[in-house]
Structures are given as C-alpha cells and as structure tokens.
Length: 147
Image 1: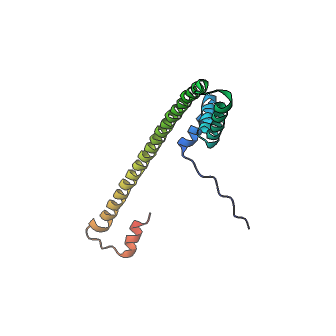
Image 2 (image 1 turned 90 degrees about the vertical axis):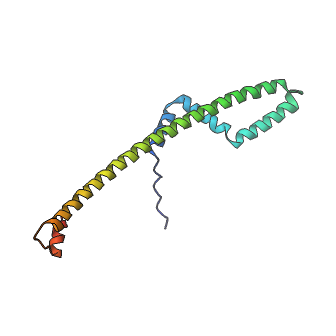
C-alpha cells in the first residue's frame, strides 16, 4: 500500500506575496535568474574553463583584455548581489510587519478572553459565595455554572 501524498507545506503570507511580486516583474525575474546562476557551482566551472582557455590560447600574458572583462563582470555581479540584498531586506521587513500585526491581534484576543473569564469568575463568585442566606448544594453549583 502506498502512503497518501502529504499536502504541500503552508507558506507565510508574506512569502507568497513576495513570490507573486517577483513572478509579476520581468526585471526581478531576470535578476533572480542571474543571481541564481552566479551563485552556483556551474558558474564557477564555466569560469574556470573560460579563464584557462583564454589565458592559454587567446591572449598572452599579462591578459589585459581578460582583466577588463573580469572587472566588468565583477561590477555587474556585485550590483545583482546588492539588488538581492535590498529585496531580501524588504522581504524581511514585510514579514516582520505581518508577524507584528498577527501578534497584536493575538494579544487583543487573549486580553479580551481574560477579561471575559474574569467577568464570569466574578459572577460565579457573587452567585455562589456572596449571596447571603443561601447554602448551595453541588447540584445548584453545577446548575449555576452551566450556560
């Protein structure tokens, strides 16, 4: 018997909004693709091969054209890194704002529940203990507690 497939994990609403924003913007998709490739091992392997071929067969020492190309590439890659860092900071801020709002809502709900419990406890105490001349039995106590 095969186990049933599990549901996909739930993602944070901010993560979903962030993914939708990235998918909707062509520039962000291009930046994501470049950054993903530049941060991978295939990128490293391609550059090792490219540099080796360039240094051995295309240009003699001290490789001035290769130095210029690598410098330009470094400038653009550092720009994509900064774009990624800025977007990550925006994402973290949006997630923090969402979490803060959720915690505030939970705090308000807990505060309201605590107040309602206090009112019920006070009312039970008044009915069961403070009313003079009444001696309640266990059945009466349970009846007073029941809604």
